[in-house]
Image (tube, rainbow, N blue to C red):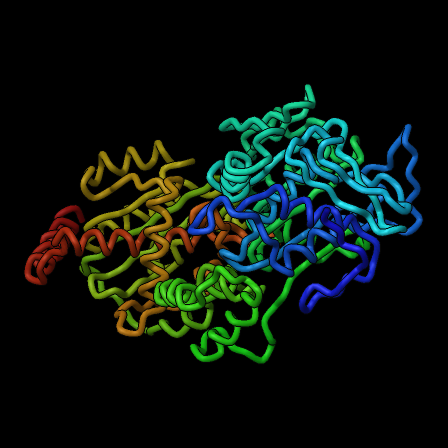
Length: 563
């Protein structure tokens, strides 16, 4: 018979409070290793996992059990829990064990033990024969009478972080007698309405349901922009109605995104348990020797981890210019500015003072708005110099950037058309990438006037193509041997500094405004211009210098003839 008699130390963690110790022993008796060479063997909790479980089931010393009206969630010290840990640390399997307990295990406070009290699986619908003897005065537990549980993530493939190991545990161990697995939900056999649902941001109909428990995964990418902050709020309202509780797991979050993970972490509520083991502050992640020490510190106790593979994964991200993401994923550190699209100093270092004479072959990028966001053109030459062209009658030299607030609250469309016409006359515009939304009619007109092969509709709403284009600009700004340079346009500089990366599943991201509402439109324009330049180079479409000069002479004669 299993027995955890007194509160005890767990490695570097000390348990000196009343808790449902039966939960840890129950998990190790009923849950199995979901995959790998130890697949199907008993799940032995790491110290950090047991510590987090016992804190989640920490019982208030003044809790009283009333059989007719059990306290449920209000018996516990913490209303919800947050675990912030690096990639591959075992957060998903740990969450799966917690769901198992909430579904069919000892999860509800059931009073204080006297001599001879214990838990017997045979009393709770499980035929495995396992028993546990409580120590006198230890908190006892019972099953939840009607568990309704949700596994929640931003996208379906992320819910697999928890649901995949849970399904494996059910199919390979004694949990299979109590749970029936499906692809979208799991049925609790002896509870008519009990179930475990898998939900995402798209499952709005189920998110408002009363629930007893919620496992929220990767809350570091739950933001207001992707509407997941609202999902979290809705779930907590559903939990409150059933005196339920929740747990959230995530990698270290990007402190510029104001994610759900950040809101939880910064909350001053005393009823939230938070677990985060940051590395020593003096160690620098960009230094290889320090990075190894950081990995050793944050992965301490995770016996399945091979630090060599973690180092390789981190180095690959760093080679791509994403030191901050590597530090968050593998260094468990929330570094300031980690979510910025571009390092402002690196962008500034690419500034060059240079004139681009009329007749130069260029490409253009264009992104337009109507009432709120900015509209603008950026140009780039064959040798990688990017600039904001100037326009205007009588040498006015106005930048091709329009802030609607300076034009009576609306972008001056005729002014934009006139500016493009001037650029087309003055330069050899080989290609122009234009994002059509809000400007579809104008882009169609320009394509008809200047040629379908020169004016290209380039939709920034395509996530894969847009990220690839953003990565191209980022790489050519940050790599040492790049010839990319720019004019130092202050508006573009400000928009580059404001642009942030909003994480998406599968190591994807989208560019987003910061929470303070600063604009990022000229960043998009810069990306489009650079993508156009790269594509023109790859296709061999840049005209040779002689051809460019002839075109300039021809246009000059044409203008003279019109005069």
